[in-house]
Length: 258
Image (cartoon, rainbow, N blue to C red; front, top):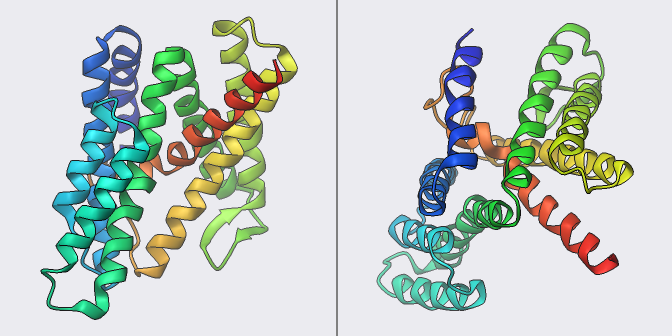
């Protein structure tokens, strides 16, 4: 019930934000969600025994999403700043792990939200459909997996996930995505819409498993408790963290083939 109530509260807010809020508000909201995910990711990393330079990560993540600075320039500045900070560390043997984990977490949690901003600028419906496919797929995987799940999908990574739930996720998430794209991006060929929806769904499922690997490695069950019934923000957005890069690749391939 908590899961349903949380969704009922958040979905209207997300819809209003994506379709009616000014661009700056969208960027700030994306930055806020990304930084929450980053904060939870850093908590997982700390639980695994590494202490990243969090202030640098927060600053880099915010700049990446809110501004339009070139990513390659930001990366170079971030690496130099990271190496300068390691000079102050007393544990030089951990410098590589600290630097790597600091920048990895930013790329993992904030990079996809920069792509979400790009998707919103291309067409707000593209930004929303990634969330819609992941939300529908997650719900199908959860409830079908609980009711009918027999064969484990990845028992060493996430023992509760099943093949039955995964297939249900692809069918419902993909189906909802196709219906949405047909209604709101009508210029898209139906077969292309099917390919896009399934591609985004599969990427989202991979994102879910990827976060599970990180949590299992750090012996953490949930990334947080911010969203009742869902866990942390990272738990809720893990699929979208792979979904937006998948969307970017898909649209770039379409553009080059056109």
